[in-house]
Image (cartoon, rainbow, N blue to C red; front, side, top):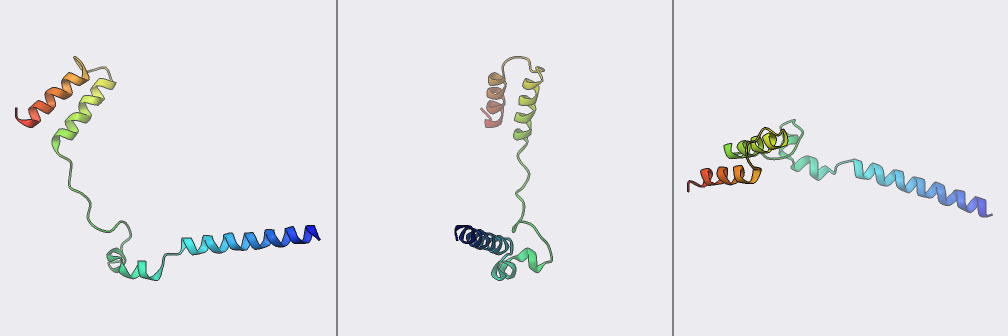
Length: 90
């Protein structure tokens, strides 16, 4: 009796997990209809991508890369401070 009950519970749990997985994987009809990308035949996130980052962000990345490659003369903090002063116009 115990073996039969455990088998029945195991089969029921497997069916429940399989059903939940299929339901989670399938997008709802509302999601497909309301997406502008699906209307245009495209996939991906809705909306447009953000604009390019300002030039000073690339300058900061260059300073950090130089610091990590030990090619930076002086300290990273002083270099970043100088860059921030140049950016703020002070």
